[in-house]
Length: 154
Image (cartoon, rainbow, N blue to C red; front, top):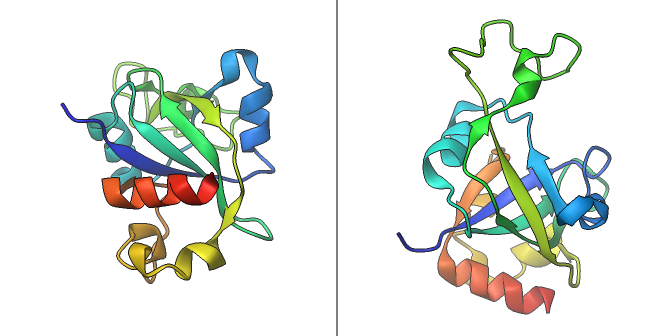
């Protein structure tokens, strides 16, 4: 199967790209996704070795903070079972989990590419992130978009 590319949004107050760089092995668990379409991308689409644009969202200057890669197969997100977690789902059980996590490893931090700059490039005009009303926390990225953004990051 061909390598795929993804954009994954994280709130930097929760988990920033710098946090992942500082984590053991520069790996973090991607947890807390509670949108079915985003969950399906993780569960059904992501494979070890896929590329990730690590995107800071819900912050003063949203943008691509670094490059990462998928380093595990999908697995049940443990936060869905924890009543103390903000991501707890009382309908989820270990026998029938509803939500999926995956491990992501930081690859490279380059120049921060903010949303305003991404919008300024005609090469990215069809990117899902830039579509009106786009709110998904996980979305596919076309190979040409990936290559262009990697060049911007430097």
